[in-house]
Image (cartoon, one colour):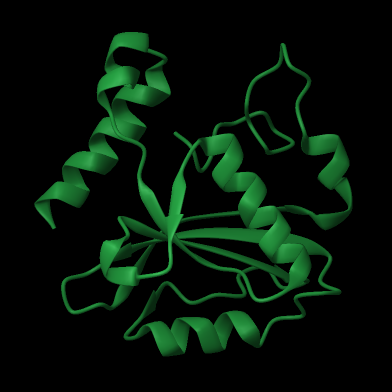
Length: 151
């Protein structure tokens, strides 16, 4: 648990400041991805690529959980889940092919394999192509230009 805390501090505290030396020392986190539809899987892959994160198929190997769903609701996912099954069931229950917005969540993984929401960002699903930045722009996948969830 302490490793995850240090990793998040290093990633979001140091890398987000743009220090190239510190960025080289900080290792990118490993994410367990929950994305229940084709469109959410594509968006999750894009997030991993933009953030330069890797993914895993085992939640025990992950540093965090990246959840991407589509929904018209404001907060489609709960702030915490007691199990991976409940988190996946909640993600699967969204309108993942027809929702108006993408919702991107980061969850921390507790020792008992329950999950606590770290952050949530939503943006228009129709603006995907416009979100891919030109080569000289910020690497942010979000319309506002922020580096969420990357740092």
